[in-house]
Length: 513
Ligand code: KIV
Ligand code: ZN
Image (cartoon, rainbow, N blue to C red):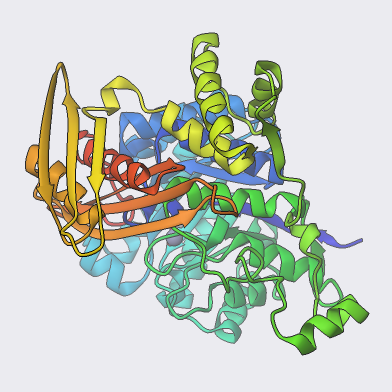
C-alpha cells in the first residue's frame, strides 16, 4: 500500500497574492468548487484577517465545500488566529494555518524579534488555533534560509503545542532540490516528536525549482505538497499543482505515494483560474499549455500515429484535454442552461439573475452558434458585476478604422445617473478608444498589460481581453469578453477602472509583519 500524498491548494491565498491576480468573492467560490471537483485535499481559501471581504470569502467557502478541508491563513498573533478560527466555524473540516518567520534576516529585519520571542509567539499561536480546531498547521516562514538548529527547537515546540501539520516553506525560492530534500530528512530525523505531524512543503519558483524541490521532499518523507493551479503565486509563483500531481502519477514507479486528484478536471481548473485572474497560460507550459500534447513535427506525428507512447508519456484525455466541451447551442432551453451552470458550480443566486443570464446566453448563441463552458464562465463573470462594483458603465461605442486614415473612437460612458460622450483619435482603434475613456475618467493609471485571447477556437470565438492598470502601487486586472474584440477591450478597460475606483484594499500577510 502506498502512502497518501495530501494536495494542499493555495491558489486562493498565495495565488491571489500575485500582483493583479485579485479575485472577487464570487470568483473565489467558483474556483473553490472546481478545486473540490478536482478533489484537492485542502483548499487554502484566504487570509481572513486581511479584510472583511476576505473573512466573508473564507467563511462562505467553508460553508459551501464538503469534500475538501478548508484552511485559513493567520499570522502568529491572537487577532489573526481568532479571525481565521471564526471564519472557519461553518466548515465540515477546517484548518487554521499559522506562520511566523524563522530565518535570521526575517526575524531581525522584518519582525525585529529575537529567536526566543519568535518561538514563544509561535507556540502561543498554535495554542490559540487549537481552541478552534484540532487541525492546525504551522509554517516557519523562510525555512529554506533558516538555521537548522533553531528550526528543530521551534518545530519541536510547535508540535508539542498541538500543530499536526508542519509546513516547510522555501519562501524565496532559494534552495536546490537535493538541499531541500536533505532539509526535510534532517528535520524529520532530528526532531523527537516529528512523527506526531504530517510534513509538508511550500516551494516558490524564483529559480524554477519549485516542483523539483517539492518532489525531492516527497522522496524524503514529505506527505503534503502546497501548490497552485498554473503555478500562480507571489513573484515567480508556487509549485504548479498539475505538474506535481502528474509527476507523481506518471512516475508511480518512483514515488512511494499517490494522490486522490481527479486529473481529468485539471484543464478545466487551469482555464478557470487563467480566465478569472487574466494570467494567460504559456503555450509550452507542462500539462496545461495549449501545445503540451500537440505534435507539430512530421517525425513526431508519424511516431504518435504508429504507437502513441513513442512520444507521449501521458494521455491528453487523462488531464481533461479533448473532453467534450460543446455544451449548449441556439436551441438549448433555460433548463439545459441552468443545469450546465449547476454542473460548473455556478450559483447565480436568484431566478431573476438566471433569467437575465439566460437572455444574454441566447444573444451569444445567436451570434456564435455553439456555446462552450469557457463562454459560460465569461458570461457569468460579466453577470456578477454588481451595481456597486460598476461605477463606470459602457453605454455605446463607435469606432472608425480605415486604411490610410487616422482611427477614431466615440465612447459613451455612464457614471451614476449621468452619461458622457467623447470622440477622439489614436494610433489605432484601441488606442483611440482608451484615450476617449481616459478623457472622461481622468484615472491617471498606467497600463501595464493589454492582451487579447480567443476563449475557444474559430474566428467566431469570443475574444477575452485583459487590461492591467497600476496607480500609486495598486495593481488591478480588468477582464472583458465579447464576440467583438473592440467591445471586449472597452469592457476590460472599464472593469479595471471600476476595480481601481473601489476602495477594497487587501493586506499581504507576509509583507505586513
Ligand atoms: O511562502 C511562504 O512562506 C508562505 C507562508 C505564509 C506559508 O506563503
Ligand atoms: Zn508562499
